[in-house]
Image (cartoon, rainbow, N blue to C red; front, side):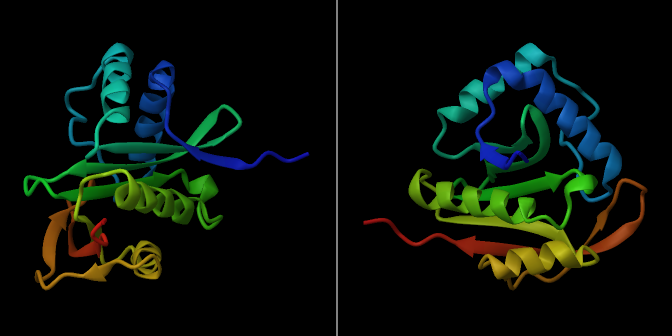
Length: 172
């Protein structure tokens, strides 16, 4: 019997596993980096953050798991505009092209539409990440009018990136 990948909220008790997943994802990708990578947090701090995220109408953290193994993550965090959430996603390379990224983003957008007070979800994607751009377009994201920008990847290389947005339908 084969197990199915579950898309779910991580429990605060899984904090050390979430931190380990984030570390693995950062090591194997030049398009995924942690904002506070130079100032690591403890498992106790992460557990507290997971607890706070679970109660927030503007923050979301989902994990993809196979049994007890975490293999992907998707987050939405508020931007300075307040009513727009920034999407972040990463899946371990061994699990690429299996629909896990699509399932994570789809579930995050469902949460944004039904449980958040956000008006839109946005992201910045490197144009060389063709698979990600196709995924976002398939799920309803559109490029904004903001001109492409240059971002620095983990190797210090300048790469072109574009901004994409998913507008949430107003709730009645």
